[in-house]
Each structure stands twice: as structure tokens, then as C-alpha cells.
Picture: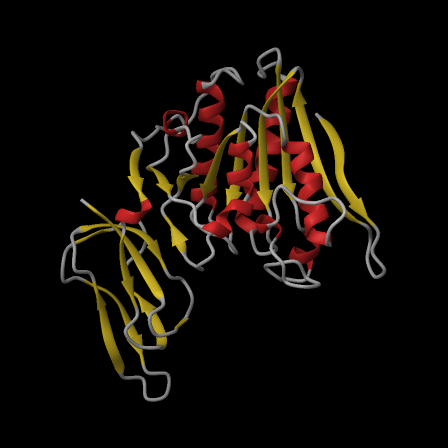
Length: 309
């Protein structure tokens, strides 16, 4: 294992801001893995830290195939994590909306440029990502539909779902999008949660990444939990369930639960008198793919996504 400072800048109040990468193996740039890009991505950073630990042991035992080089960057935004802010602490810009970056631009543009320079040229790229809407997901692999996406390789992770979605104009500044344009087979992994660590879904995600590495001959085979036969879905086909009222959110179902049309998924409660303002129901049969996980909701907020059977 070789430790490298990917980017560093001085700070007037704290220790220097540093982005640290860990290199394993040698030879061709084969796989790069990126963890927390935002300050609340605790689950994502934990997974990357465990991957650094596991890959260090695998390398010591000669388990990395000759000619393959792996880079892991556990955190790209330690400042924001230190002060419990999702975005860049100084101006609330999002590093993951700054790619491919600009080394003479604003701070987050310069950070993105340094990260992208380190990541460019790898055959495969994995980002441990979080969604812009707070909530919990069934762990899955997600790809932008750019014409360069690789669904068959995404299935090698053996996760429950592989999802694709059509990029919107503001998605063109994402790491995943730019990685694909620069000839890296890029995959975003959503590990179920963001600002809290769920050890079961973490272990599932770590095994999925190691499984993909085994199946692409980056590392030698080793025992892992049973893989899924991934279901490939276009995210536009997911059924959205939204809040008819604002209020206190009481969730009755969790992700990966099968539901039937008419079933109550949650209650929205009046914050002043405690009465139930409405029951949140599904109109379709399916599996809960995404759930809102905050105690309060606004009217028309997205509460659930259902994968129809």
C-alpha cells in the first residue's frame, strides 16, 4: 500500500486541507474508488475505509493480479464532514457538481480538477454516492445513460438492482458523467444510507465491490456472500409516491418490502394536534426501492419510489 496526498491547501484556522489516496498493486490503471464527496456521506467513507483495510491485506497475501493498479480515495471533503455540513463549508457549493474541474477557478473547482487528474485514465471507476433527496435506498448500482454506460459490467457487482437514468443538463458536471466521457467505465453505488452507518448494507456493498474485482480478474477469488441476479431498471419507470400534506412523517414500511396496491406506507401527522392528516398509500403492487427518512415532510415531497412487479 502506498499513501499519496492527492490535493492539499493551507487553512487559516485548522490543519491543512488534504485529500489522501491509497494505491495498491502496480501496472495499468485498472480501478479507482471514490468515497465521501459530501460532508454527510459517513456510510460512504466507512465503506472506503474498510476497502482500504481489506485491499491492504489482500495485497500483503499476493491477491492483487499482476499488472493491475487500484486507487482508493476515502474522502474528498473532510472539512465539511468536520463541521457537519453536506456541501463545501465556505459557500455551500457541491464538489460533485464541479467536474471535470478547473485548476484556476473557485476552491471547489480546483479540488474537483485535482481529484479528476488523479482519477483520469483508469479502466473502471466506482463512486460511493448519495442521492440529492434525503432517504434510504435498496443498495444498487446506478449509471447515467450517456452512450458509454456498461450494463453488463454493472451486473458483475451482484447487487439487487442496476439502474440507469437519462442525464439532465446539470448532471453533465458529475464525476460519473465525466468519467464516462473520458473512457472510464464508471459506476455509482448507493449503499442504502448516507449520514448513518448501517453495517449490514456496508458489508453487502463491500462484498459487491470485491466481487466485481474478482469477476474482472483484478484480485484473486475469495469467499463472499451469495450474489444477486441483478434486475436492470430504468429509473423513469419507478412509481413516485408524494406527500399530500406537510407534517410529521411516520414511516410504516422500509426499503425492499413488497407492497400491494392500497397498502398504507406511512402516516402524515399534524404537528399541533397529533391527528393523522392523511395516510400515504401505494396505488401499485411492487417493492419499495426508496423511502424518505426524515421526521418532517413538506407538501408534494417525494416519500417513496416503488419498483413495480
